[in-house]
Length: 235
Ligand SMILES: [Zn+2]
Image (cartoon, rainbow, N blue to C red):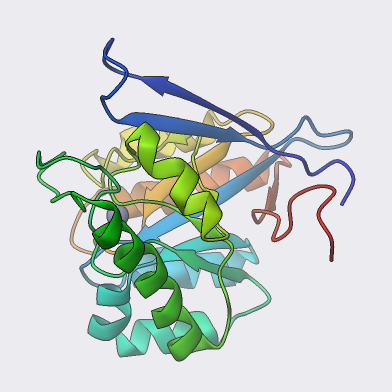
């Protein structure tokens, strides 16, 4: 798919090379209207129908990152997502929502995998849960927290997954208020990969996701899903 090569970079919030990094991902520059990719994580939790119903009403596509835990907890949400394959691309957010970090320290209160064997269970277990529930094989993996040990990334890629970074963290773990989230999303620029959350229906941030998407759409910004094949890869 010419023109869909993504631009992946990473930054670390720490000087030390072994600290977890937060990979960035952008779409290539558009030749036409500005475009963005909306990605929504389904960590453990519930199903934010405010966002899901609005995306269907507006015809806005999104890439959803599902955990095995969320699928087990949200049968109705899963059914809704499955009913709209034209809009919702399904990708892998891990089996148990463990951070792909190879040490014993929690990150944002999330437990790490700790070792490579558990990393494999987390990544392949998440993929197996999606295959079982939906009948699709995901090609993108986004680790819980969005942070990764550098040494965890090659094994994840060797399992056949690309690392789903992002360039615009819209809701900071669904912790921001609606107006803040709306402003952050409405300020998206061409090529941004936006991340927000679909698992926190009781938090204000979800209303901001809807408002921000409406404002982008009103500006003529196009929404695309993450490409399911890397540029130049065999079909
Ligand atoms: Zn998550």
